[in-house]
Image (cartoon, rainbow, N blue to C red; front, side, top):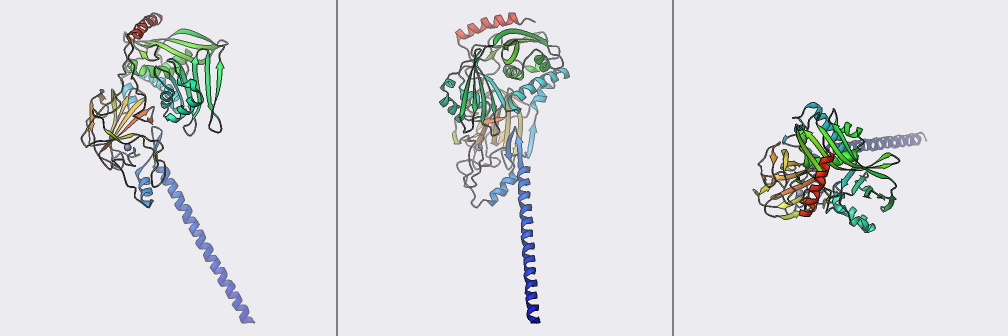
Length: 476
Ligand SMILES: [Zn+2]
């Protein structure tokens, strides 16, 4: 009896010991599991780096995932899935163009300009709010592309509301993107009498509101002096961020802002909307006149929506479609939704790949300043970034030899590099990116700035009359 009891007790003891061991093992597994999961999460976080607001994965996270993937992806046709900009440069030569271009100005004027451009940036980038004045030839796709949106949004909207197919120069758009970069709100100033608002509803459809306006538009001349902050003085004159942004965009090709100093005088010709004697925020800058070091600078809006100087000339000489003299075969198109064929993850292709033999000359598609010449062994290889005006950048990757230095000014058509096969590249090719306001767009379909800016003889005549009138109104 006693022995039996003892046995039963032993068995119970043994059972509880096994239970304890099992419990211990399970806990250990759990702790290890949690630890591993956490370390992968932090790894991912550490390796996502933002450049121009775009997230780039760094190589180490990539190589971990590639090593984990069961089949090595067979690269095809000189296109690499690792040809994106990586977070880390192995060698870099870079200039901060904003600082550089302002450094020759007296401190006061620097602050003034920085403030002006800051406000413009806030209006067009940071808050994901965008505005644009329609120029001749613009389609809704061209307008929305300024915020990096793909053609499908414009197609959807014009299918629902065909009136959006016909845009007129001088009309204004103001729009806001949502969290996932979808178009959430679009305001179209059709005329001084009418505004149309398109809003994204649940179910992914757009509703429309048409506002007939009872407001009054007044054309006014505003005068001031750059004092402390041009932004402040412009705001004091009642201009809002949208109009200051429009002004900054107009100035980027028209007036060499390097020449502005504190104490410089300016005069603006604006038409603005009033409701019950209050500014509504809608308006248009028709002309600006700045006197700096005894010299007059003008930016005057033509009937095509663009800005020219009082002689009808523009600084922006336009862009070539391709950054090389001879056309090359596209081996991989621009594709923001590209998926890795094995992992299935979205790996956007932010540029277009041109197949070409090593040593092919690469040319600047427009006037600009070299912002960066760098090297990434596990990414872009030798690459160059060029800035054109304030809003545009072009990027060239996998080069064999750069022919320019950071900070150097380049002219349209000038040789900037020889193509190659450096970095994570599986065959000789050029990876070419086109950025507007820091967002990559399709280089093959983007509306190129400055193109069709030439005026016809008749238009020119009309413009020169308009310019004469503006000159008289804006005397300083
Ligand atoms: Zn590429």
